Image (cartoon, rainbow, N blue to C red):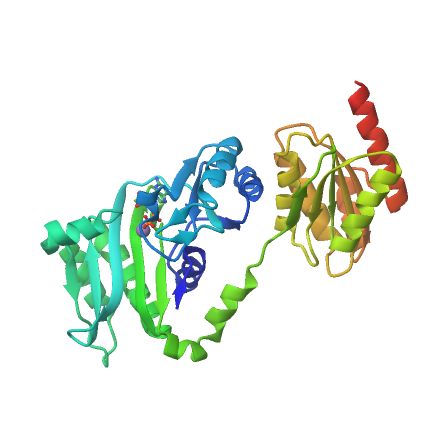
Length: 370
Ligand code: GDP
Ligand code: MN
């Protein structure tokens, strides 16, 4: 079974291999929200199981949220080697000084694992294997004997990297081999492993686990299941963005807006138990949607905790690069703490949904009259 890059990276990271901060997006709007939240130039990467995304145009850069919208829109739905792109990884863009290649796979002819490594990593690795095979170092660890750190360093030395990189690259090779063994892999690969001013990080990750041993790696199978769409988002024709926790509550909030003579600009359901990060992401989605004049956030905490909501709101408003008019209704689990946090940040809120909806419509009317 092959794993998407974002999952493979998590698994590598669990073994101590450094990765860059990143989040998954299912729509251009989510990509924008993530980019706003990270506040840095980002890489937008198609999540497909085939390689060669870079060459196919499935890896693009964005310097600001507007660019993220454009490139995410270009990449989503694209077909790469026959595979449709349904989600993206939005990752902090690394400053690359150097790209290396390291991989562990099965050498069927030798009936052993093989480690391959090169100091010339990146998207041209297949060509390098054809034109300059001597630049790819091959090493067969003994499958029944423990693979030792000094062997890994010896591979790094043979790669011909500078002497200060032998130990850290050796360490990553050793950890990658540990992943390979632990999860009964067919392939565990990092191409490129990049050198940045902050050190070495896995800029890409490939992981393939032998199907017959999946039964003993249920933790991996679970990781695949955990990530659903973060938020449910529908664009509508009005100018009041409606955000709620749970589809029923969000629909009710929309009805309330309508009842007071307003028009919803979005239906956005953050679901149950939304974290601070999801709240922040949801707000960023609507704040980057131009027709929105007022945001109506309607939260009745059950599994969702009011204090998490408050923290997400505060963070999003701090980061927003335009003035946001928001009306918040916040009650339920941990409401005291949530309301206290909002008061401390000077953000008003309501307890009653009816009142809040009315206030949102009035505010929107005032803004339209200006
Ligand atoms: P692949 O083509 O499917 O293997 O996708 P990769 O994830 O390997 O990305 C292709 C290429 O994009 C890499 O070899 C890098 O040159 C470039 N790239 C990927 N991530 C970053 C990044 O964070 N910063 C920079 N500058 N380049 C990146
Ligand atoms: Mn790659």
